[in-house]
Length: 574
Image 1 (cartoon, rainbow, N blue to C red):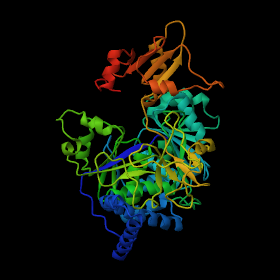
Image 2 (image 1 turned 120 degrees about the vertical axis):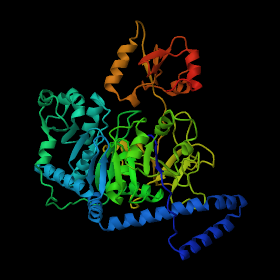
Image 3 (image 1 turned 180 degrees about the vertical axis):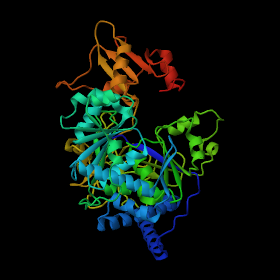
Image 4 (image 1 turned 60 degrees about the vertical axis):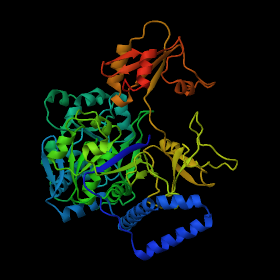
């Protein structure tokens, strides 16, 4: 999975981070002093003095999260059980606010809806370990569904609501789901694949039914009606699952292949949400604006997790809107916003005045983190350093064992020395981010994907020492190109675009299209991509044609020297 970046922006000042105890600090400083003496390097001393405040802040946070995770592991806690503790503390406090309707769910009301979901699921005869696919746009009901299912050990599979046809079928199939719950806004997409679903697949819909005939054509039950008649008291059920057992599945984006179902266990959910809470100085009185999709870990773990585990109020928006973003924040008195990827660029593009992001919007603190749903090697920018994408401690390198290792430029394979071990990068060198796997450590676990082959592909062995294993992060995403072998006749660009628009979500559609007489292959007929990746989209070979998808015009246009120059200079946006 490509590394994703997400950021929490606090509209209020962070609280000061306190060290655990004065004796503990003295011991640590003494150890650092010995380390500096042993290394005998003025350069190391300079680096240590410049980074010690940041590293100690992060160390304290890691210790807090680690201790709380071990406590939950010992107590066999689960996310539903930890949420129940929040309900007990402030039952009438707003938990979720649905921006689309203004509907407010208190913590007690959210729990009651979860109980109704649990009773409904038990009535279906499902058991712990069964999977239910959830396919709907972001709304509070989605939270009640996965959390209610988790109360009785049933695992949700979050299906990206942008997926259609084969991608949709693949995600439902790979999860092994026994049933699918979809929003009525997705009925067209479901009807397209209904004949290809497993014969025993049970379908439930939620939302306004403006086309009963279409829904009846493929045997769909109304979930809303079933939940309205479902009890709201706790089910008589003793959960067998514990802190390190499966909670749900979140899929990778699928930009470089089919989406993979990443396994999220209870402890991973807690870890991600807990790091966000403690790292960025959040408080239970904060109100978070969450316009990120709830099928994504940033939205449903980093965002909603603050509500379920730490008592914050979360405003859920159905979809991101740059024009409504700040009006929504003001309307709901939000103190924290959660963004990812390009959202800040979209906000800056809104008409007001041109100035630097933090000053323009009066953001007092920005905290950034980089990682992936399934990874064990996240990075964090804890002190708001502009331009930083996290750090690896130079004075405490073993406390959070992540490393950058050298890779081959052409194929991204890990470079190894004469001993067969990977070669660490020097400061300033680019490389692959890897995290050492230790399944006895809740911070170092790698739970993998629903299928073992995908899991194996993300693990490298003999990296730091012989016999070890690490999670391999992936590389930075780029605009996609489709290379198509085409000879003779006219290529119908409009028909091609219509086909990809119907079959692929917007982020997976090829931005560039390359028509060529034939594609390069190996002796065993595997497609060679190195030359195409190296040449990119610059017009070169007269026998090949390259096209660019102009999203505003809604068509593919030939890449000329002028258009290439405009793209390079940023006058044309990808």
